[in-house]
Length: 398
Image (tube, rainbow, N blue to C red):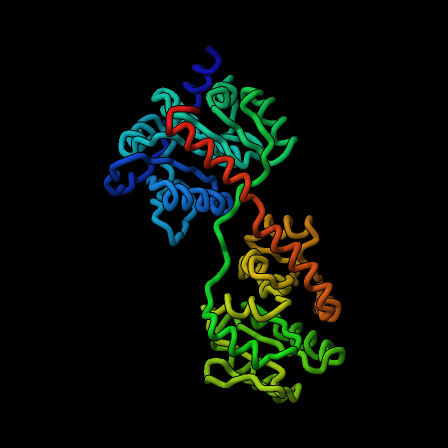
């Protein structure tokens, strides 16, 4: 009774919500799994889960997320329907999924109720805490409890998350602490021939990278390189400016003010033993630079508007990470890296110079890079656990 009342109140509060119904592609034949992520950050793990289902099992995957997403796999991506009974029914009528996998804990009552009425198996993964859609919280008696009770499995990040789901109404036996899922790979591509050629040119020189460097942070990187050269006179800095138009002004500044020897990638100049700074003008070669540089400073994080590159990119390729106090959209990832002591935070230009000098020690850089790689590859076993559960359900065994 309480659940019915809560659902009625929820639907009444939502009756004016409108949304243009998307032009959905035709449903492919065969089994289909529906994944849902409440935002782009949660979607990274759902994209990896979807990739495995598509490539390993030949299953069609539809991923709903309110944020825009891009993927290289054959996953169908669309925004979630407006959470009204009519839009929920239209969504499920069109896709007819075999099961649904939600993440983090976001509940869409109208959509979930329609799924429950159709006896659609429901799973929750990477659970943090149950919550209704943003800006839709309110007093809906029994609603959350009634919805959570229908989930066959609730896989949570940690024990506090598990307690939150049990308290909110999830069946105790369905709740399990598993940790996070593996995220979509961010290991960027590169040409092995290019890597080999540049590695031979660099020989045993120490190398560091300033990735996506904004103009506001150029002075800090110049100061850090100047200080580090006193400790390692053969040190080479690779710079990829945020704005390619800054390549020439930056090169002129370094030559005029610092007297450094500069080589420009865009003009096909090759770094020799005398080169102190190698400036690239394309963001399509980060996979190459991360592999060549044992240390990476992530631009935008110190004096910019926020970190401009995903920190898991260098983490996945063995480069130790330096970053400033402005994580931008990657706050959660930096939190994970920090907790694992897998990245070095700096608060100022002086801190950047000091941290760089410290990481010129290969052993220290390697320890940081190894910890970062562990974070980047975390969750593989959990993803396998979820895949096995999905397969059992789709085979009629779950």
